[in-house]
Image 1 (cartoon, rainbow, N blue to C red):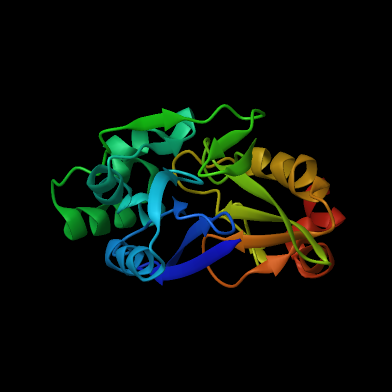
Image 2: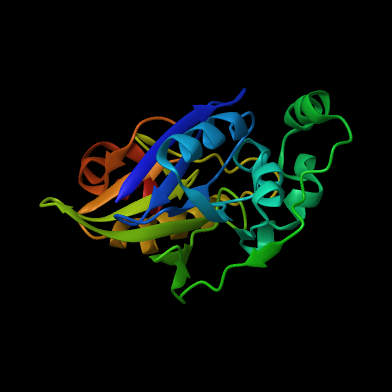
Length: 229
């Protein structure tokens, strides 16, 4: 499997490009602010053609360049329907300060792609010969999802999970922004994250990659005392 990671923008968000072994097609996950030029460079260097843009949620720092890339390559952007409105109104999911920053960065420019598709959680999503499992994981936003792929190139890893802002190394996504819900996040952590297979490698929306094994041991938000409160 081909996997590239790009970090960009004011909020230093992670964007990923994934391709099946030996294939010249790929998907782009969470192309955030100022990621487009780096994405194009990776595509050209590896002779890859994107087939879709997948979004873990609708916050601006993860979707800012989605329309630019999707419209350029005439491909669809996939997002949960609960977050689709954030493509039309990126400030709606942010604090007053965050919305003002977005306004300063893009003015009145539109970031809604020409082609938008909604996930069907629970049903496999087959793109570029990759089969993604889409799992609803609300809390950070109403439409947050986990995107999972089987992985067989490492004896200790069974799957790769793109966690967006649901789970980071040592932390979780904030729930105090519009659309956030602390109780929904606790349910997601208990009923979704804690159920991930032990061999899950986690690729988050910010920061370094981790594993579910490490997070079960060290992440304070996955401990019983937090989840009971």
